[in-house]
Image (cartoon, rainbow, N blue to C red):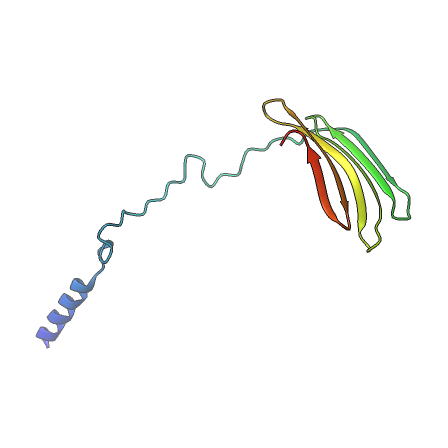
Length: 120
């Protein structure tokens, strides 16, 4: 009986995996999470609203525009489309970190979304 117990213990010990068995050239897996890992991002205050205009005519036609303190501007006009969609046209602009102002004009209707810009 002692012989069976000793052989069983030896078999269990010999069969233990040592990490790289079957993968002789694999590198160890190490995870680096950086100094702030797991922490929520710092709170950045939302930019204030400089102007906000909204107009709903009640028949599906609408207009709105707004501007924020950080230079974002949006202007949109919409009306009901022939296939149940809202046809919209408008523009938006925003500053890039280097100070370049991106300006985009667009149309969205039954033919899809089509935007134009000189920046990109």
